Image (cartoon, rainbow, N blue to C red; front, top):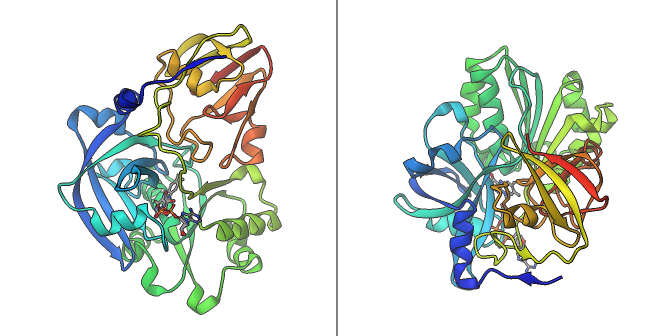
Length: 360
Ligand SMILES: Cc1cc2nc3c(=O)[nH]c(=O)nc-3n(C[C@H](O)[C@H](O)[C@H](O)COP(=O)(O)OP(=O)(O)OC[C@H]3O[C@@H](n4cnc5c(N)ncnc54)[C@H](O)[C@@H]3O)c2cc1C
């Protein structure tokens, strides 16, 4: 199978065609000693592409002298109903490149290339009662979700929020204000490592027990999320009801990759057929067996969503309705998601001859 690579000089133009937009930083807010929020305004022509659901993230292109740029995902801490600028909140990672570059260099008036909102860490309904867990910067998508529930839904939220010490609590004042405004619908329980030690499975289970029957959303450092998952398992919460967002760095770069718009693969005859439901439209495509579903769709000119193209984010997730596919790599979907038919299009190759997937 031969692939016709997109020439390097055209890569950025291809990426732009596939969805890259420019946003302007309209305000930088110092949240804590090591976290900043960036308020971002898209061009007015792009406004529609920046409609988002609470819990979704943007992918930012961060300049680098060494590599031209790196690409990093940041969850939106703003909520759709707020109607103001988009806001991401970045916490410094020790020895990390992108987070420190943004904390040190992001300034009002600067423009950044971004991929529009993506991700599946979002509640199906704002009228559902939620149990939310956040560790450190993991508060960003969780704040967006809880503000949306309080403003636009009828659900009740309990937030268990872990931090190293009092001064590292991002959005402490905003959470206190929300809890005071909605005393019957929002309860915030802080866990401070400086006082209580590292969050333990037993401690988290004891705190969460009264709300264990709720839909659960978890975001934070790996060990924190593992402890929460174990605590919820101990409380008998079905794994399917525990939604996890993992904050990892992308190793690839969708802004500068020569496959940003999808490789065009010459059909060598070894192909499956895939029917795709996307944005309310049906498409039938020939799917070369050694090409991913995402590249197949992009090569056919479909406006399929994606961000990292390395199985690490979830921007490209879709659901298999019939047939079977396998994923080359998956760092984000849980076994329960896969059992429900969810796959990452950027990693999916066909197993059966006939496959149907939906994004709707
Ligand atoms: C969907 C999603 C949403 C996210 N939302 C947020 C958010 O809202 N806020 C937020 O702050 N973060 C968020 N993140 C995480 C964010 O994308 C970055 O991963 C984070 O900011 C760290 O990036 P960095 O470039 O600073 O660190 P990196 O440069 O990626 O480094 C990370 C760590 O790896 C180590 N490291 C780097 N290079 C090497 C190497 N070659 N060998 C060994 N170790 C190495 C570094 O020492 C450092 O400790 C999110 C991630 C995802 C996937």
